[in-house]
Image (cartoon, rainbow, N blue to C red; front, side, top):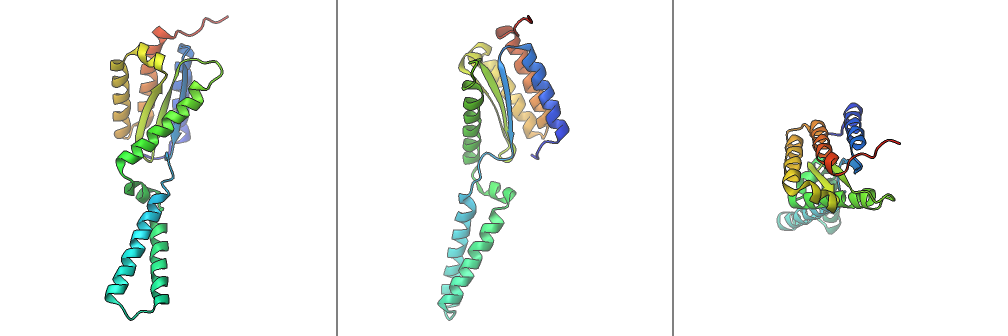
Length: 194
């Protein structure tokens, strides 16, 4: 997934504002390039490479001096760390369950900060996408989730996830926002204009 263009972002925000006007529930959205820096992985692979190079030097090239051997190991560590810090490669090195766990944790932290901690205490939901992890989620408050029902949420989230997997993230967002608004209009009607 790539970062959304300004036009794509604007289309999603228009859909979000239109949905928000139809219901009293709070809507929020977050799209991040990645959910974590995963700094440990480039260093771990660089350390393993340095050890492998040191072992190969000790086994195959025993006459090399300790100083030269150390410099070669340090160079192997540095080059591997820089190469593995390239985001697409770094994300390929991180196990899928860990990427999903980090993205899910970020989605729930943002939900708690943006919806649960709001001054007006309205029920609400967060549409979350982490582009690097290729992860999408809709996090809803407990009462809102219960009123809409598990089956409806499962359908909305499955359609959202499928759109994201097919590279149609923007349309997936818009469709998920619209589906949520349709369900929430009945349970959380917009306040009457004064």
